[in-house]
Length: 635
Image (cartoon, rainbow, N blue to C red; front, side, top):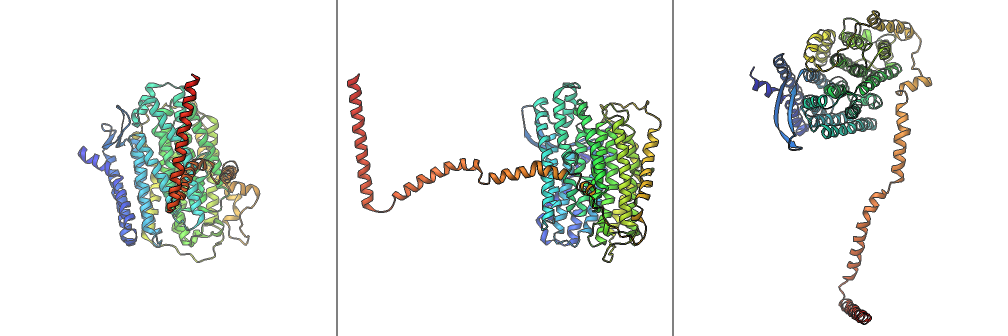
């Protein structure tokens, strides 16, 4: 294939879904389901096919493909911001996830949302989400990356609050938008610092210039990396900005799959991996990344143990798995973190979409304690969901096993991670297997606790997406060698981690941990998996409620931030600053009133006013003359 065709296909990747968005949003009320679904899904098919064709052109001889479209604006005599796309091994992995998994989610969404009155608007927002994410991962400069970064934030707000007639959905959308803005602000300041210190914004140039300009331990890369980390923890829902993600389940299930598997929460991981040149100059910040990832995966694992909503269990599992990716990045194992990002996209999309099929069959029931017995009633969905859980628990042979083991294997000897964080990763794996088994026992085994008849969907679109994702989840580990080879040129400056001195029992412990969790769960949650007359009720203890509420972070932020802000807003409800500005308006209004009152149309009033004014002028003139004469005599 000629170079010009390859560049054209690369440039068109976000154009297909963008055109679809414009068409769908412009003719929303006039399009039938068939037309809207064809336009939306068709655009994703074109993007996915173009992605695979372009990626095939990458090789050892051609490790990078660029597409310069046009000049956006000029910042200085030497720095221009272009609309340009940059494809290397890292971007190739990301566009495979975004377009490939995004296509399967779009196909599922077309069937899942068919009866919704605003189906066309929903699919338009889904297309726009893909556009923003493709711009983010393909941008060759930080300004264009930030455009895509804010674009995914906007789309998450639109999709989480899609059913805006319910107040809870609106509040969840607003919460996601505000919390992520905190991280986005930190990231924007970091970008300003990069331009101030380096004078460049092209990503590759920034990484290279940073290594040439600074050495490990300098203060500038430390603060820049710390600010970029702020943006990453906001988008990827890591401590301390993780509270928005569980509430984001308010949106339709395909939205949850898209956010958790293919788009928004992976953006923070991608940012750190893309800007690894700066992070390698700040090993302290890399240690922060590792610790934040470890603490988040533990917190999310504990919270998932007590959730009653099937989607919230999966939401906390996403926080936990993103924590593994952050832990890997902080340890310097960039390729392993990106590998887990890819496999996680496979099985997390499978889990969310299968959960959506189950919720649809149960008439939109999401409470695990009102499910049960689905193993016999929904055998296909049970099989597919089980495949996703096997990958999530990282049982040997699954895609999750290969990627998670690649992370854990490099933690013990890493200078920015170490044995303690390795132990945190093992505990996180144990928690993952326990809450996964609890979810399976509650939903699929034991007594049937739902009150309505099941209505399993017979849609071929639903089943096609689920089966395709199940296959990818099973075979995803075979992509490891190809992925590592493609990422090697990207992370060539990353340190090589020495693993020769690791104890021989490390890998055995990592492999055995999920089985220990399964064995523990088999006995501890026995009442959930057996058919008996014992009524299954959720744990209502104070500790369970505390964990169910995300370990109190929402309450903490409410008391520390939300309530004081609302109190200040109430105290200043008349806006003292606005009142100061309004003084000028009050003065002009006063003068206007005075002048208006003088214009009453009465001739006598006008004559008297002219006479009085003339008298005042004469008196002023006389006084001025007398004062002048007195001053002359005095002199």
